[in-house]
Image (cartoon, rainbow, N blue to C red):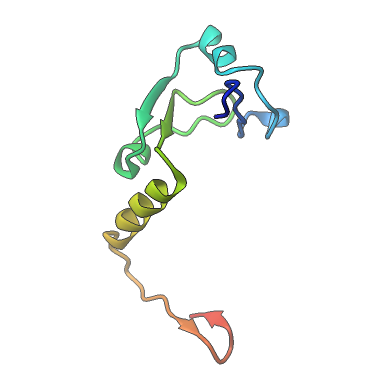
Length: 92
């Protein structure tokens, strides 16, 4: 979000990527919940594709989001092994 309160939204039908006039634009319709980014909480949220989300998440910076996502994915149980093959330049 910039200094002027502009935000970009995605996932609302034909308006994907369109700029909102302000965060207040959505707040007029239904007040969303704004929460600190926690991947465990994010995956519990219902994903709405025809309307605005009920909750939005924020971090102080991109590095914080990266670190939290890396920690989240490192703890996932996978029933398979993924590895990179440098000879074929592919993932097996």
